[in-house]
Image (cartoon, rainbow, N blue to C red; front, side):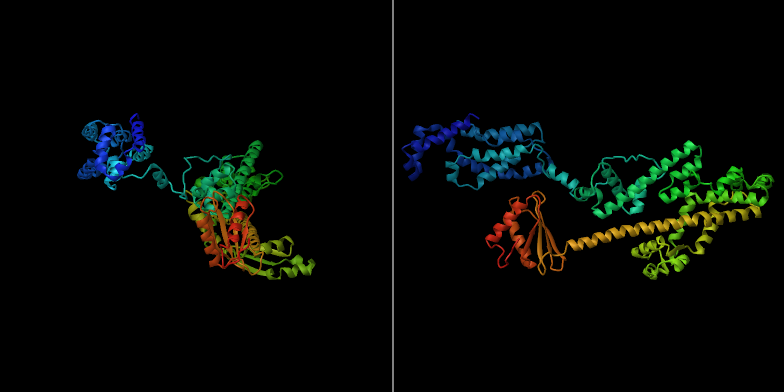
Amino acid sequence: MSSLPRRVKCVAKAPTSEELPSFLNSSSESEEEEEEWEPKSKVARRPRLPVKTEAKTKKAAAPRSTVARKMVKKVAIKEEMDVSFPIAPVEDNKMQLLKPKEENAGTKAKSLNRTPEVPKKMEMNSFQGRNQNSLVNDEKPSTSVPVVKQEKCEEEFAFDEPPSKKIKLNACPEGKPVKNLGGKKIKEEFEMNWDIVQVLSEITNVEPWVCANLIWLFQEENTIPFIARYRKELINNLEADALREVQHTLEELRTVAKKTHTMIQKLKKEGKLSSCLLKGLLNCKTLEELDHVSAPYKTGSKGTKAQRAKQLGLEPAALSLLQNPVELNLFSYIRPNTKGLANIQEVEAGVQHILADIFAKDKDTLDFIRKLCQQRYISIQSTLAKVSSKNGNEKDIDKFQLYHEFSCNIKNIQHHQILAINRGENLKILTVKVNIPDGVKNEFCWWCVNERWRPKQFLKPDFMRLLRSSVEDAYKRLIYPLLCREFRSKLTSDAEKESVMMFGRNLRQLLLTSPVRGRALMGVDPGYKHGCKLAIISPTSQILHTDVVYLHSGQGFREAEKIKRLLLQYNCSTVVIGNGTACRETEAYFADLIMKKYFAPLDVVY
């Protein structure tokens, strides 16, 4: 550090000497005269010519540095600074030139991993492109020192490896899906027998990891616009409409879970809760299923036929028919003086009602019948109601003339047709019915008798007849109405969602209508960090082009060329600037370009 001011001192004295003109005219005389009045600086200057020759001889050692570079991953920078550029004044030139070699030898003897070859090569390259005059007259420690400082900034400099920042970007590039949020587990307030992530994924046809991320984001009170714009990697680039559908379905599932636990607490207080009923309630995924399971236990209801049969003590007989029919004797349950047990027909009817109730609330049985209906032709029919044809208003009846004799597959029916049928039914003009073919019933009854509810032992013909009649009763009285409610409910909910989406599409087209007839428009949404969004709309309100330009980040001139090219390409002469962040700066930007007639030959206005 003390040597550098001394050199600067020498350079400051040189212009004040009276020998300066002669120094410029002849180099040999100036060298002798400089030796007389400043011997030290001259000794340091004269041997700088051999430095170039030594740099040339060191080229032979360059392959060693490349070999070492492949083997070595990281370099110690501090030792390179000490070795590369000797700055201190040296009395003996040969000692000055040999000193780096000795230090290099010492470092190589200490460790192979720390070799200061790279800065030497940089030093060679810096000296090779210079002539002799520049080597004699110019002293360059000040220009080469910043190179060392740049090396020093990278404390973990490594060869054959990208910098740590690039490694981070390559490991997780922008926009790549993040499937695991640090192992965060989703805990719902109300526990059910089904996983909310899996059920949500099945209903919405969205990947399970996306559903899990969305549940967590909604729990953190993030809004849908924020998630759609700034959390794209967590939701696999879903659109806002899909996010709203997932959110709506999630709210419905949580409503079902909340009502289920409310019902469980209520039945506990009343003493009606059994293990079988608890399992059936916790398996419910929709409000229709919950109503189907809990309807017999609601206060004020007379109770189902199965409940009245259980109160008569026929439940053990029904369970025995499925598990141990050999020992079953229905005549032992006859009580002549008791209503419902007076004869064998009443006993069989009670057992049938209990079995039908068991079949209709079994999860596997309901899943099988739903899967069977998806494979068959299920239709919805509407006819003119008899009462409305006599007493109804003719104008209202004429409105629904298309649906007086209407039938369509539930998979192909249009959403507006469902809404129209529902309005006609509410006005009591139409009668609506869901038709399920008899083949579904026959296959379902065969499956129940021979597979799902097949008795564990041999059944007598009377008991087999009772089992078949129980399955048919369960389908006709309990399962078929449940399926009709589910189909109607799903069709209505889908139609209502589609009506809202149709309203949104119509409103969007209305908002996209050009305020200026017969002109193409360029809309500009101003912004600083995320740039200004551009959109070019045709005279018929069609989106022609969208882009992003960065007008306020020092790239204004380059972006002006892009804007001019787009305006010329689409023959657009009207610019619409939005009101918001950076709107004044964007207005000034376009006003300046228009004033300079930058967009000529177009006469652009904003």
